[in-house]
Image 1 (cartoon, rainbow, N blue to C red):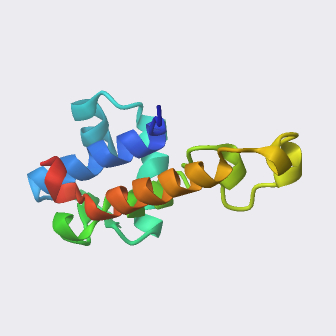
Image 2 (image 1 turned 45 degrees about the horizontal axis):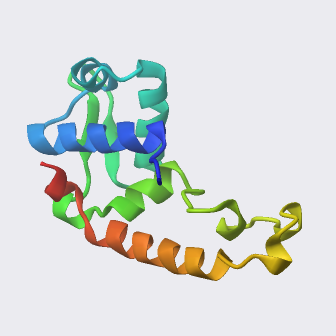
Length: 133
């Protein structure tokens, strides 16, 4: 079964928290509220900022805030920002080296797995952060 990475899970939890609060929140506040390891969450927040989903603010009332409305952020965008290699099988990963798999030339499931990957990406592309609220 496909399993989201901890980075993606924590990113979704952080975005859900920010969307529900509608305010600026610190990484520490989000970490404490969601019982998320602070160090990993701080890295996740930087990745989301780099993607343009959130922004950070300095100062006494600093922290992170949404830059984009929750209904405009699909899960595929979050997954891409936090875990680019989220694929069903390794041989269809972007930039994978097919020679590493001894069965690649004779594999009977690589094409069906590519179809499954495409359908999953379409589903993640349709679901938004607003649907997590």
